Length: 164
Image 1 (cartoon, rainbow, N blue to C red):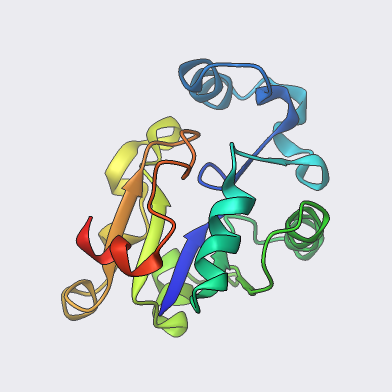
Image 2 (image 1 turned 180 degrees about the horizontal axis):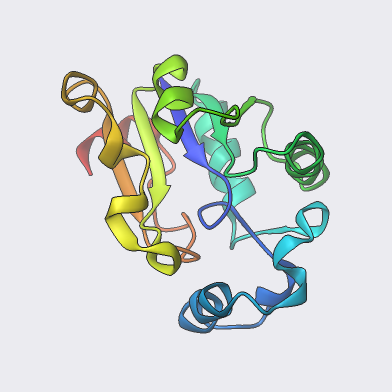
């Protein structure tokens, strides 16, 4: 099973979000004034995301990450954060200059997408899954989570994701 997981807002968040409620974090992002928002090298895991992904990986799931970052230095910073915090190894996808999220996602051919609901930037219209071709939506199972709500509540067995 190949699981594509969105990074920012689903797995990791800016340092200024620590100690805040989910609603406060969403408001920070909407306002865009929190200084750590663009400090990608110092992002931190949301909840127990590392433990959850390690559980999926230990049960044979292949983890593929998708970042919102396009700039090479920012993509590298996200990669460093994933390694620094002990996320399981996995390909880190990003959009090229003229690409949309769906382009990177379609190349990955995931069985499951775990993605936040993009509340701070416009909701479902901004989600990757929303823009996939209909024939791919039939093949890929979406597991939506609340932005900055984490993935702790998801089952440890990756096969169970297909039942959500």
